[in-house]
Length: 389
Ligand SMILES: *Cc1c(COP(=O)(O)O)cnc(C)c1O
Image (cartoon, rainbow, N blue to C red; front, side, top):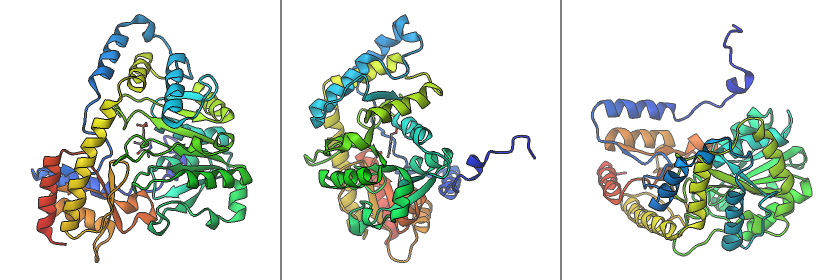
């Protein structure tokens, strides 16, 4: 069966755990039920006007229609470095410590190709954004899973990583503020990661997609603020969530020069950079008035408050998240994640994501994305309350 027989890397993909819920969703929808989808982490708010305006102007300019530079326009990389200085107090060399990405997922997915040899290990959190594990597998590596447990505030317990695994590990992925648990990490945790990584010579990849989506005055820090972080690590950022630009495909990686160079070498052989008009729009986002970000945070904070209060009244155990637009909710006694998600879908027309889909320790939880307006969230709560958990 050689013809179109999938390569090992595709055949070893873990089973897609959302298949069943996707099928049920289609079934319920076909019955004409008005579905409220709290499943996907894709902002329902639109990209701010001034960013769209810049895109329109940039699209008109023939200079932007050509191949962009692989690593990003100088102006884009300078805008990123300027933002890092202002936001985190971290100095970056725009030439050597910044690279543009076609969304941060692209960079995260390509990074292992630069550093993982067959048989090498990557330390991967679980539950987590699936890209870290799959990118490791695609590079021929093995994932060693670091469970994120509520008793550790969803931080990996570095002490439990066996010595011989740490010695074989080339990369460690971390992500704070975290998807799916909404957990946050402080500088003290990042300092411990730096110490661990320096000791075992491991590249740290911090996925920082949600640093700007934080509530009640909380300001998440950058991994690069930790002393010595630049010697071992890189940070991946995205404009997707901060400026409601998921469809535009723009992000960036910053940090260790060799890390950026390695990622750049992979990328320059696979893609040809980010459309310059999109980079121009990205510059407008990063350098422009940040009141749009504050407004976005206010919108999600209000939604969060409605949802936390409502779910508690409905009998659920949930913490009020300090960051991200997710809520990580414990399933009630007598349910598994899948059974709970199925029940909410069939009896309330509400889509949530079963926690086990993000990895085995996510069993017993479900994730809600606050990507519907307050009216729809209230409607979802009314329906959930009727089920009487
Ligand atoms: C949404 C998200 C991203 C961003 O992906 P883009 O490719 O930049 O759109 C990265 N990491 C996590 C954990 C996310 O949830």
